[in-house]
Image 1 (cartoon, rainbow, N blue to C red):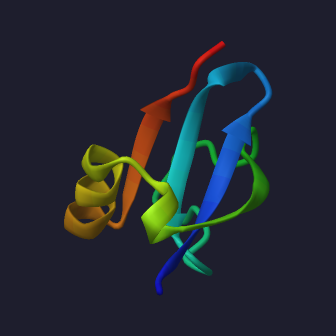
Image 2 (cartoon, rainbow, N blue to C red):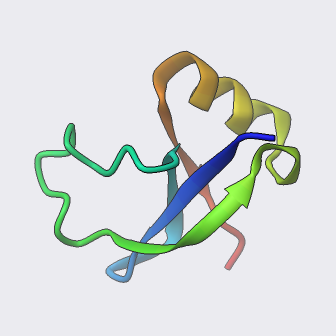
Length: 65
């Protein structure tokens, strides 16, 4: 099963960022505010988030607050 890295920006705690495990954040202009929070498995993600990851290699998700 595929795993993804999950990042949070403490300045925007209602927004999460998922990327392929180990990919890091090389494409973000300002990657420094994002902190790795852990990994998640593909079966733990909503279908829309998983589709974005498969299509783009990353996706953002609004988190409940």
